[in-house]
Length: 57
Image 1 (cartoon, one colour):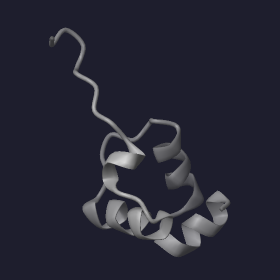
Image 2: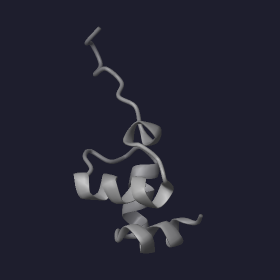
Image 3: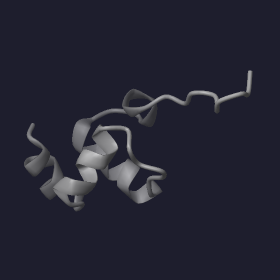
């Protein structure tokens, strides 16, 4: 699936999907995350993982 197709299904711009894809997003709305998971038939943990902040063990 292309970013353009995903954008149409999820209802966000291609530019915003690119920000998410390239790990440049500071946050994501729950509704966007839910729409992505529905479109991609996945769970949130399949899309990202959390890394500890710098200096925190």
